[in-house]
Structures are given as C-alpha cells and as structure tokens.
Image (cartoon, rainbow, N blue to C red; front, side, top):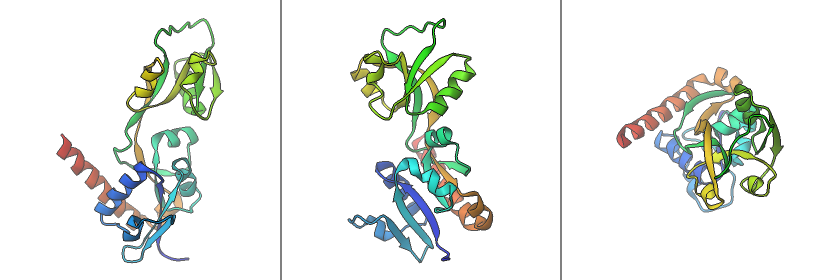
Length: 216
C-alpha cells in the first residue's frame, strides 16, 4: 500500500474552488490544472492523490476508505448520514435547504401535507420536529414543477438565489437548514494518519478564516 493521502473532490465548479483552497494551503498538484480528461492526479512531493467524483458520491468514497478525506455538501451528510468525521466548514457552496411553494399557498394543518423532494430523510426529520403529518413524494429532478402541476403542496430543495423559484411563480417559505461544503475524513484514516490529516485541516481552516476576515 502506498503512502499517498487520497483526497476525493466533487466534480464541477465547486470542486475547482475547493482544489484552489488545498493548493493555497500547500497541497497543490500541478497536473490537475492540465487540460485533460484524467480523473486521478498525484503529487509525490506533497504526498497527495486527488480524484474527481460525482458530488453525491464523495461521502461514500470517504466512508468506505477509498479516500482518506474529501469535500461534501452538508445536504449530502444530513441526507445519507455517512459514518465519517466532519472536520471543518469550508464556507463555500453556501446556500440553504428550504420549503418552497406557489405564491398563493396557505398551509392547512388539518390535511396531510404533500411534499416533493430529493431529500426524504432531511424532510422527514424537519417535519417530524414540527409534528406535522406529511406525505413524501421522492423525485430526482425538476422538483419545481411538482406544486405547479398539483403533484405536491410544497417542495423541499436547495435554494441558492431563488431565481428558479421566482421564474416558476414559487417562493421559499421556511429555511430547513443552512448548507455549505465540509471537509470530511474516513474514521480509520483519521486515527492512523492523524498527523497529516490534522495538518491539512488546520491549514484549510486558517485559509478559510483569513479569507473571511478579509471579506468582513
């Protein structure tokens, strides 16, 4: 077994921004900047190996030990509850999970609320805390059309700017939970490679907090 630290990055814009943080924290890998279709990149000098995976899969790679650390959205961690350590908040990919509905929606507590969502576990937990009876309709995409076509009364989904909701005559009613990208670690890796993982986490935390202070 080699001694490289395996890091799972989410594909896409967020992953590229996340990689910038690792690079600025001193864990760069120049080949990742090359224009190619490779998925795995190594830098023996810094002892890191990066690989791109689907954002929703990062936590699986980390939980099962194929990656030592990775970056996953808080929505994924709350929905799937993987057995990993959450090390720090990267304060990136900031948005919120919200309840949204048509502009004229009025909740009738006497009726079971029909909720369309990609996040059934987060939704169940949220409405359970309100003691509200719901019927969950699990969808995988185009959630916004569910209340428009009468499939559901409300939706629970990630809201960034709210533009998509507005364009479909919907509006957010309640925030369920704030969301951002988190650095996570495999539990066994954290125990046996604590020195290097803690060092990376501390460097990243320092970078994030410096950036925040500059923006204040």
